[in-house]
Image 1: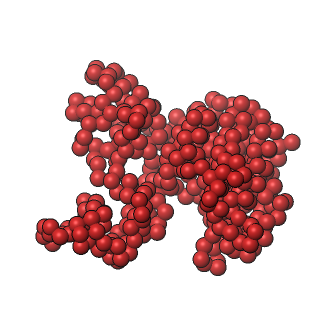
Image 2: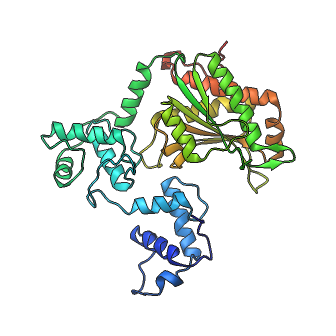
Image 3: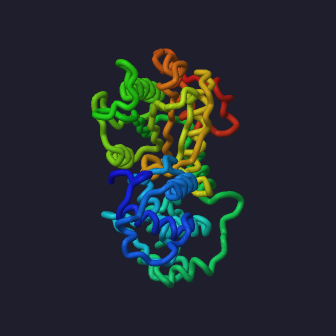
Length: 374
């Protein structure tokens, strides 16, 4: 869809107003108005409400309503019990009611996958197991009887977040080696989208070079590595996530370089799936911190921290996923560093160290910036 922004009018803006009012982010309309759908204006109050919504939902905060923000507004309207929930492989159900179901199952000790608001096969399997244990018809549909059972039971998992406990145990059981692990490295942009361009330098070319360096180092350490695109290709976001899912990857790393109108914008940031209010990819969060800190230690670039986001790139992948922004091409200092092949090799070495440290037990984990694989 064409993004809605300040000054736009029409039925789509009226729909956005209705969603924001249902969430309490805009005051109720003074009275029913049949002309609202045509005369609704995307005004300053709407933009501020959208920015607030994007902030609390882990979206990019730009005050505009694009595809991701519009889907998030639609999903936020649903509460658990508003509709029957069942798994549809062709069109998986999405919404806040699905998130509530996943969180409830996880609290009760059932493996429902990540609490990402998408009703997939893992959530259906967890729901069927719960229904069997509770003596209900194990049809994988969350209807009135299943809702009553979910509400009657108290929380059973204690000692930490259920998903964190499960993922941490799985990580320890998988062993410390990289041999046989499947890792997908995603060079951002490409094809008709070169990203930020400065002279003959493009973001797409630099991240592809960086991805190739990471690929070689991971492969030498025994991992099976896939790149989501070739040098001149530009797959869609959906194609990138589908590729990673079909490869059954253990880890997904998306590489980007940033740009900004501010002359002060510079540094390294990492992003993982999370809403900022509890639901998150715990392994993704750990890897985001490791990768960012290793890159900072090896390059001396500014540390911009790790942040939870609900971007589709992180949400639609079925494995721990991280987007790593390795600096700002729009900043003269960062650009000089990133154009240096030695710095890109240092970044690649940092990512390799982070991947290896992710699988090491706590007692064998070395200090940041010191780990080197032969």
